Length: 343
Image 1 (cartoon, rainbow, N blue to C red):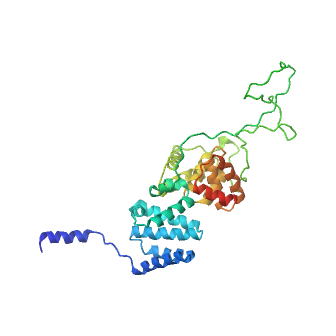
Image 2 (cartoon, rainbow, N blue to C red):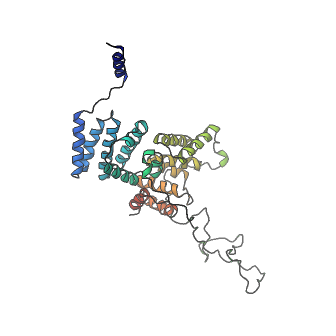
Image 3 (tube, one colour):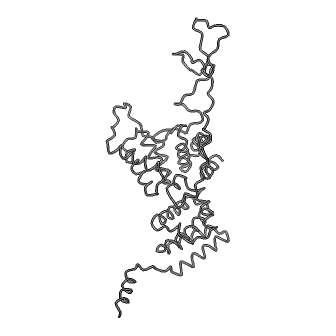
């Protein structure tokens, strides 16, 4: 045998073997698609799940199978199954570029990405490069959100010093009530709302919130390592990240939040991290422990609304959602939850 032939054979032997897909699983894929075409979506989801199992060694064909499975799960309103299938697509994309390089039919890819935009949080999509195209286009910043009109404060009571006839308070600066005047339910003038008591309905009080220490000095101080964990969690949640990095952010935040139940910021970071990876029960728990995010954080109010809705507290979800919507950017995902929560 010539040396060059021997070298060619050695090179072939060194290449990894690609296992062909068993005809049985190919048949399942066809059966699942046929069931989908005749609108038997429950059976399609069951058969396609089995078909995908036989394509684990062929990432690009697995991406095609998972896309069809996700659409079948969407049709039967299996939201949890749909998101799990989406996470599998994200994972094989991160490892093999399987979704972006798969030979998916254009109509299949378009239908899937439309449903992903409606079913998956925008924050999660931002961390998956292959699916960022499903995010809505940001409108150009043309106008700022106008502050709600303030109610006029009660006029200052006369103190014995007469004002000049015809005089009036300066425009835009209503007179404040005198110091020490109590505000009670019998007052005829409405009390002025402050940032500490935002307008609108409030979510119900936490059912299992961890009590904060009565004396702030008794709270356990943060260590440098804990501060580092919170800073890292903030960085991960503030940027476009992969699903693995989002799980890391949640783990870092919860490690501090569990040790310091009195720290609102730590609880809210843990809640946001849990929301970003669809751990609704954990998100609701940390939001309850940390307290209301406040009207100046509409995104976290929306996260709270979704977490409460997914854990069965529809009334609390509606209260939080109504407060978040005026200052929240509308996306198909936001609108889909608004329809479900407020119906």
